[in-house]
Image (cartoon, rainbow, N blue to C red; front, side, top):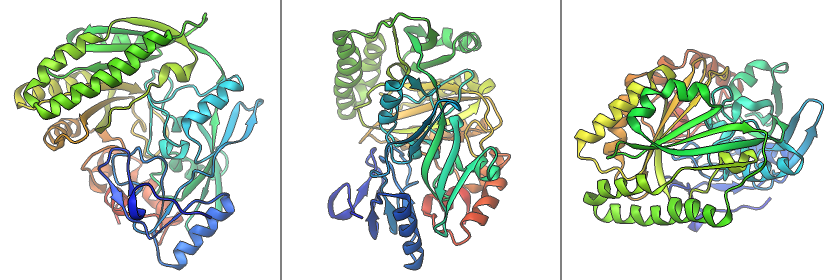
Length: 439
């Protein structure tokens, strides 16, 4: 087993640059057996254990001063079952590699988030999601899980096998064990037509229910300090494929969305007073476009501008009111917000600590450019979200604790009771897990 570190002197850092940790040791197991042995050894040595993917969480959910398990050797597809229409994949596989490999086999996930850098286990364990009227988070597409529990044994679960574990471990926050393999439902590869179109915020909010009902996947980005949004609707298509042209794609996805946007963020950080003017220009830079392609090329896009993010799920019925309150707060606050606010939806699911557990949900994500002070904005936004019984994304900035979660998750006690059973000694605990689940 080799040990690796990202950063100097064995220090691990997350993608957003706001969390670092110095684990006692880092382990890169090449098999489930090696991983189980590492877990047993950590317990013998009195060290806590955390697994980390690509570090895309903005919270310290994966940080530890004990044993840090890095899964980059646990990658690849184990099995494709065309009768059951499932794929079983090693936990450290990046979503990007899974999407490309599935497409080559003529298969696809039903829905996905808007980036695909993360590992499958990191993305699902924190509840990563896209937007969808009927199709939910990545974790909601899981049909089976394999995990190494605190005693070093390998546990498998599905709807039929250990269903109580299955209900919780699909979004397990790393608190129930180390996920080693995931079985996803897949379907034959299909085409999506994306329609991106600027629209006034007032119109989006007044027509939101209709826009949601008429599209399989609807989302919008609102530019603070403006009344403008960019909307995106993705719907299944009979074809033909009409991908974004290379030049147009480079101009809109790289030059405008990453290049010019990066420069605008630098200017805004250096001179906050310019932010509203820049926002007016940014909101008008993107023009309408329509294209048709395979799912991962439509759902996901590169995100090269580093940022810090908070995202809350509110009941879908409360979305319009929540966004209006957020806009009123920004307008009167004197804050300078240079990043758009992203709004998506998900149907209710049956996962214990899913942000959409038991309720149709809308997601509101606020971002700030990395290196700019974000606390005042996030604190004010969080006050609005929590007034609507919002549930924060497990991998994004928030200040909530176990007492709060016990109030907004009806099945919270079910999760903590399972944790008591699977990890009585709290081998998989760290400061973040202690805060959100209780000691």
